[in-house]
Image (tube, rainbow, N blue to C red; front, side, top):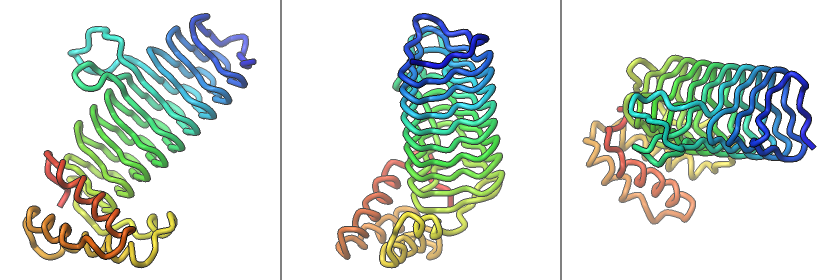
Length: 262
């Protein structure tokens, strides 16, 4: 059975899994589904067509599932879907999607979202992501797995951030940030690769050397983007592991319609 504080307001039409905990003065509205073991902190508001998976921790004063901050929104039945094992800290705001995109804002699993983070409509987040305090994501932003965004960073709408990429404190991203790359500044400039993060995730020395070689082609040789992509494509064939990293980079660069951080 769910544990609901007497002061909480939970609509009878909300669906609560086993061992869900709802804190004092929290509000859970109709249309919300919360999975087993998830806890909702005091004064948090869970609204809209929101599905929250198992074992999430949502801290006090978070506003989850509010309507998109988009003037084109006309009350369409869009959604927010949150996976399992996420931590969402105080005062975070996560909005539902819009029909101008897929209609769904989606958060994966095992993400660590710190206080005052805003995740706007139609954002698509993978898993194992860390978003530090007061970072703001515009609409339609895509973050791949293992991304780290430094505190007070801002990500422009429609920007994509590739797997294992990282930004420093107060970074402004208005172009796509390729996989593995670290960036900082306003506007963002590429700084290097996320070598320490890759080591922590079990990347071998061979794979890290391959990532460094791709970074060199993109940023250190003075090549055009097209020439850099061609040079990276020629790196295939060394090993299945490094080929997977090359494919990841090429797939990302092939869809970089906004251009990339250089």
